[in-house]
Image (cartoon, rainbow, N blue to C red; front, side):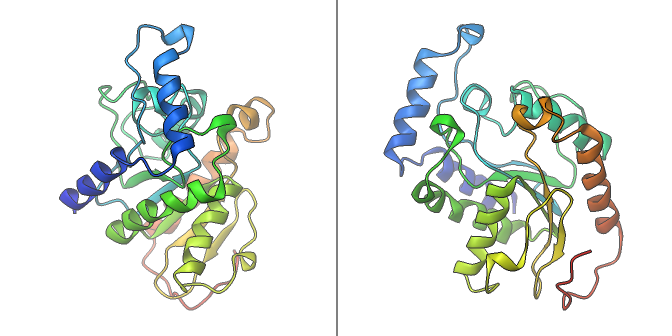
Length: 239
């Protein structure tokens, strides 16, 4: 399992499928932000991160230009991570509440973090083609991990995770599963249970659209679900 995830990550890091994103991520890494002028920017696609035996898969949107694109680890070194990791720690999914660099000893516990896009996009907006180029990496991670729960951070992550399932004929329509903060669906067959949260972007957290208690509540629900014995996969009812 670990070796296979390492192979996926190695392929992600070498990816150059999207010329616009390659140009942008490398330009950001060259010019840098003044606050990080002495930092060595990662400037490459950002691989998945976490517990290779995780039962929770967390799906984000894309790396931040001066966050993950700088540090090389998901949700590390930016305001989104400053909000997310304390709640993962509080819920028992991380060994510490801070994420500063790849060398900071952070470990995820029963959780793994990926994204629908692995390169920092201009204006935080990857195109549909760019997301389509990246989705096979997320699907490969999920196929290997076989998680019991998926947490989609934001409407875009939610929609494109479901789009991948439609493409693979595992569900029929994205529209059957409406995104909202706190939404939870048992998908058909042996698919993981899907949970939704607003994305922990500064735009959401600074305006109060997403509070720490709102995210903590979603993570508590996931924890309760994972702590129960596996339930029937036949019901697609929203709870």
